[in-house]
Image (cartoon, rainbow, N blue to C red; front, side):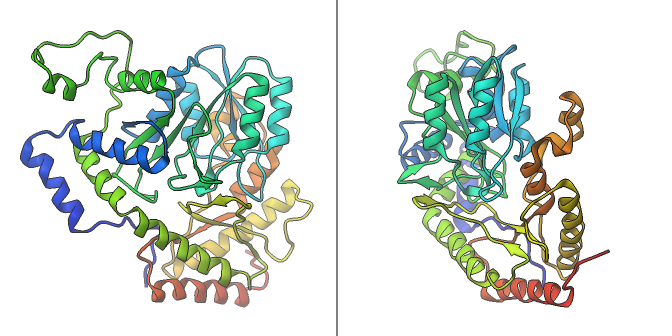
Length: 401
């Protein structure tokens, strides 16, 4: 049996929807994208949603629209996908890494405040809602107001993630989402920026379309559309196609089914993996609703995760890697959670960082394991995963090379 890390939920509706733009001839950003934006904004309880080519371009455009540029600094958690830091550097600003809480994989609030106290020229915080669990946005917003900094939420993984009935991406100045195939809903590639600030939404809308004062769709609907619009700012080609927009509309219509399915599989993992002390399952604080873009555990081995040192992390990492290799040999896809960005060659060399500088991020990088999760996962597939986890862990009490 082959178990992928995830599967997109497509059916005949997506096939039919893709054909309509092809038949109409309108395949660039158009009516389907506009409908997708409207549906997404309604779901997230926010007034403005702007679709872009992917989440990275959404982050970049959001930072630019907030005035972030050369000479500024932006705080980014050290454990996140590299795109978070890349988007900051695209603006000419400097990345300031912050360590994480190992229990939630999200930015460490006391360490965040320490950076805000001691670093100069901090202009923004980019909290990441990793794997579908919101960062502690109430506390982050208190700090943002106290230190007068902007907040751009990297909500790439956080579709249908909530804190006390407030959707991820609606706490800060803006929030940015991904529709990559690894995400809960997908348009192949694609991104969305949401905000409650009309001026910011308009700015991003222009930036995604080369800085044009009117979109192609607006020109098409208005008299005099044969004339090119004015360009009032330097922009980018960050548009979403109407083919992707059509997929997005269909995916939004399936959100209840998709999210219920993912959460049911996560619930089953929570129950069945408790029997394995070598694995630490995800935590969900009170009042939070996890989106489960990924189901990510920590590998604790026989030693546990108390009193972590780099040497202990490296030792457990070797065991984790063997564990993952053995599952892969049985046809079960796994992944590490994501990067400790400060350990990647570009950032390590650019900022002269050591792997131990952000120890919890380093631990998360070396010890996280993502197990398969998707709405259509069958009982047979799920049971096969649990059975093989059990066999590998019980046959190898100590996973050693």
